[in-house]
Image: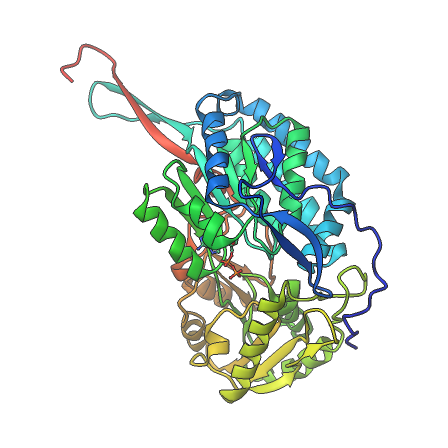
Length: 499
Ligand code: ADP
């Protein structure tokens, strides 16, 4: 049963909104132009708070602070051990303030309070600890030189990093970038998404409390084409790390190329396949498909929104899926019984609904859902299409909403071919008990992560990032740390040498 999302009775726990200004060089400040923008509660469209609107001048100030902290400050010069200790303190502060943070983010992003409290925030604390533990284990190599030379490599922090963060996982995306960059000894300017600025500012304050020196983390709230673009074309930023749409990723890479050729790491869109074979446990597979498409209201780059089911179990699977989808409750993100809150804002809400309309126009058959829910707020029914194929927009393009395309296939080779028939390559899921099929499919899919008999199985130690137009560079794992390091070769003669 879908509850109406406009239920306003779940309003507990919401903390006072203390941090609404830019965080530059250890201080909360107004933007130079003293402009603000509104951040909106997606449950009802009401204004939560006015947030300082940073632009180019503010990015300049933030970069100046980060540059100074990198070139002359203690952070890159501290031992990795000391950096790790401060980072561990920051992780503890996340745990201590988990209720406040979860409430802020549920309010700002329409994400489920319970999931934030049990999932996003503690798992971000654990990611900070993972990189805190790595901070004193960054080292180079002794090279095997072919001549009378002694060679070593040093691993040095890349410098000032610009992090541009999306709105769908404001906390996880903040720390998946900030934590390894801190461990590496970088300094940074972070731009959270304009839809969800509240927790990033809160983290700026926690970092200060933990003892991160001034200028190391600067947070500039504001819009993409202004503040975001100022970061990607800045001459004094050494690297930009971005998570967001493929379209904006292209703009960022272009701006980097046109300015100072800063390093660019991109985690972009996806349209990921979940392939379910005849031998699968149908109940479990239907559960994975549901979560894969509707988790976080489908606002997730790794959504498994193309579900391929082998013909032998297709009919039974479809029945099971419908049955389970009926228990997928949409409602207020503060209500513990909700499995899906509102889409993040009006723009996304309208975009998802227009994709659904397009799916219907192109001949898709609505198995369930297809409409918005309630009279206010941005709630959408979980929606499943059948009678669709890879030529249709809803199967080709990233929708970023609770919309699944359910398709039938015959052979393993057909499944691989159709799964790879996309410009994206972020993740894939495979459900089978046959080890040979699992091995063949996981090695044949052109994607950065393959989950076999699971989905969303994220781990701090597992690198994550796309093939093809889903981006380049990895977040998470040791790869996610190494991208914030430069390798320098240092060579000296070991005996009287003519070189
Ligand atoms: P979405 O389209 O889903 O909102 P975006 O890729 O536009 O996702 O947003 C991700 C992040 O990129 C946000 O912080 C946004 O402000 C930022 N952004 C948007 N446009 C640009 C741009 N032209 N240059 C740099 N950053 C941008």
